[in-house]
Length: 331
Image (cartoon, rainbow, N blue to C red):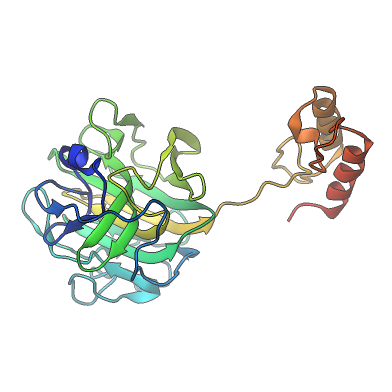
């Protein structure tokens, strides 16, 4: 379910957004603002911690048109923690949902299968609750060109900071694929400021949302490049929680959208000894020593390997520290 910009001004007043009729991206006219949670508070009754999480859809039967639930119904129970949106809904063109996705062999980023958002009001949810750390939401995306003409033929990757069925939700991230216009948008924002760049059609492209719960920020990446952020996370629409409560993969009236290699994982910690950030094995080599010496000569804070605070903060101990980390290698 998505959240519409026409409600944003009201949401700024703060509070958890509640709905009893509509899901996916937020739409106006269906939401009240109860008493907001205290800043940083985790709402009660969020689902149990289901993250980290990943799925490449290869374990499911090809051609299945009722994923994740045998019978599409709000908050149904499917495999690997998948469910459908918690309330009944309609697409912009009036088709009822939430609807199942399909397991397709037409396109796959890895293996032989992917999840196809091949009908309106597909609204597949993975719920959980984490309240600390840095996380990466990853979805490989394939958007078919030439099949979506209605203005509402859009698809989304949505992250909610509150997801308490049946009616208490708060949205943080609404990563929109506006297929008819060929643009990627931040659906939290109004046009023209919501335009983040062009969709790459007819091929697999990674989309990522980087969430730093402590810093309370999110960042969008597309095809490896940052396209938006960092920007406030829990207060993106009203006053929400410092948490990741649900991933919502939603199609309004779009078809021909495929998602694969969906994951929510802790952000990897860079290997300190890989000073030059190389990715070709051997990752650690003489170039890292040269890099460290250069940063030391430039008085770069990176060279303060032992995190000392007593002047001079850069000294021979940092060389010893770097050699130790180099010897320990990278995970």
